[in-house]
Image (cartoon, rainbow, N blue to C red; front, side, top):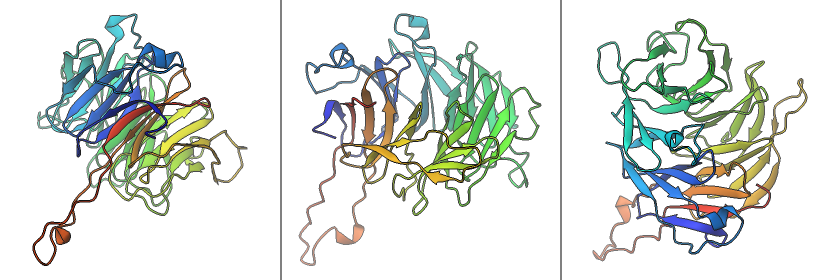
Length: 370
């Protein structure tokens, strides 16, 4: 990835980026890092026009500090640099309300505070805007809280996904992923390995429209609708069955699998969709583009073919994203590395040399097939 990157931002050892996201107008990139900051990068116009950047060294425009570890971040879907009011993004972190940040200044525009039945702070673990940006969905513990984006505060529509922690039905546990199909229909995924689709027009205590099943399923960390009646889900801590699954919403069963290699960790490994192509990286640093064109309605679940492999990342590729309308791809690489406590020194007391660890980084690659 280092040789192929036209832009690259390196981070200090241990300050691992958590995914990457292009702005809807394609002029900026977002990433979150281990130091509880959401960082914004502007992409030089020369790169967007297909040329070479003035320098490969890439400095952030600004960083927004969350109180603690960042869980999720999302761009306002109608964002465009010609309209400063629309230039914003949301983020959520450990023990914090969801925040809305100004993408020009980095200032906090407001907070969306979830409250539980004890009137205590209920933090969000995942975020999703409705396609129009009018509503912000915040996934918590067995509950989705829907806020009016234009009204910050604690006023929201609380939609529980399970009545209690011991309930026999519903989606239980922390909701690690959200996705919106339209202004009313949304999908949730939990760290307990459950995926379901709900309709916001139904009563808040109503059942799910569809429950998607595939056993065993790891903790769900990313969801995306493809606009063709399928819901794609990525899970963590999977080994032999590690893949991005595409569920057919008519049946709730798996229609296609994109196998990207084992993910034997709890790290989020994101993916991105563009028409019939799915971009995903793996824990071994390999980055694949899959063909996920819909098959016949009665076809059995099949493995999606790999149509391209991008230059390998130096470490775990935890985020990958297509540019909205340019032949560019953004990748985030890095993971936590721990020293072996049993090998800190030799028998004679001499300290051993720590193994070299690739620097965490976010990079932009020119990719003609993107």
